[in-house]
Length: 545
Image (cartoon, one colour):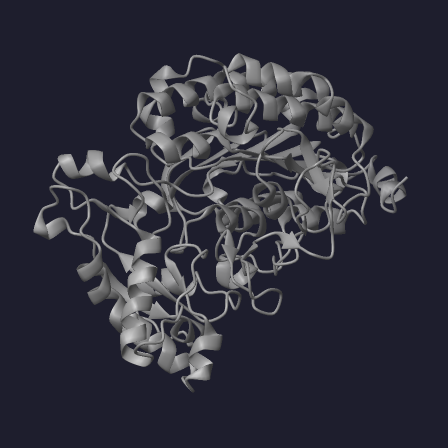
């Protein structure tokens, strides 16, 4: 019996205690954080007539709290920062994850590191013959997550797991104190992990990997088995594959059957994999969402049978890690100032101009390839040899970038002069570190995007609907609303069903759940508790003799 058990028993005859939901009492039994990668905020309402299931997206639209206006409050809208923001309830200036990958000269001067790479650990479960790569961990995440706080509050009794096709999505949403995070080996599709959590795969993961489901999925999509991530990951089959794996984890680990609340984070990668290739308006993306609706219905129906008390004891939050821009070729035809340019080509052009300015006749790589737009990484070693400080180097690059962009990037064929690729503004890392930014909404977005990681660099604001790449397909990376707009939906006994038009943010997920669970908010949390969607908790009055 827990420490308060006798006290509660003694009071039972004189006090009627309401069923207050908190993590210590395992109410709910299970918390699910569901992220759809590249899920723009307008999708659910745009396609809601397509959704025919009772417990797919309609679990939120008809039975849950549906927020129509959820926007990230930062400018670096990439996968790793988005998942970290959902998990920690903080922005990059709180959790430290500013991109999917960056240069870190303290660790290597010849290659970038991903947001979750960690040389202190090794991959567990990689197929024989796979390239030797670093293991993964949440080492770069400088804040606790909701999952961490649940584990801390229960002295390690709660079980928390993270699942995705992507390592960064599985790890950064779930956190440090989890019992495991699982993602796939891109080529084979087998689920793997890292020695940060375990030395070998659990038997149930190994069983899933050898069950034939991988081969069945490849066959179902007509793939060649060359790369599971791209062949299967971009399809409804990929959604089903990931959710079936989540079911195996939940069942084997008995999540939702313990004396305290358990938690699982699931990030569905398929919407992002396909979305990059076709854009948000393509019928294929709509079909994928329709398919995801069916697979989610199966998953939540399954949960209802495998969690103690069923879905009445499950709370779910659903969101996206970022939005997405429409394909530039399509948007340009509609009259918008959309365009595409070469990010690598722009860096090459900058290196040519900097060579002319600083080392004529001696070509140098002043800017590095391999970073993440809209960041431009500087090779500080080259500037330091020329006795140029970080402040002067970043200011020089910031001043030159807009002109070099205009000179070197012609844009898509037939571009109007007004819609040529352009850079509106550039901000240096030194500026961002000092908070020397405009006193307006953009300044706040930039401040929330700052991290000490990444070395010398500058951050560029490109023209709206303009992006690296080609006319077809699309991407995300900007401060514009289409990249920051994502869904925010809750389901569970604590929430008042309905549609809400309040301006909210993904950081509110961790804050709201922490409040309802009666635990500390994550260490850097800046979110608001969404009280407008929470059912009032009324304690019954004491009965006196």
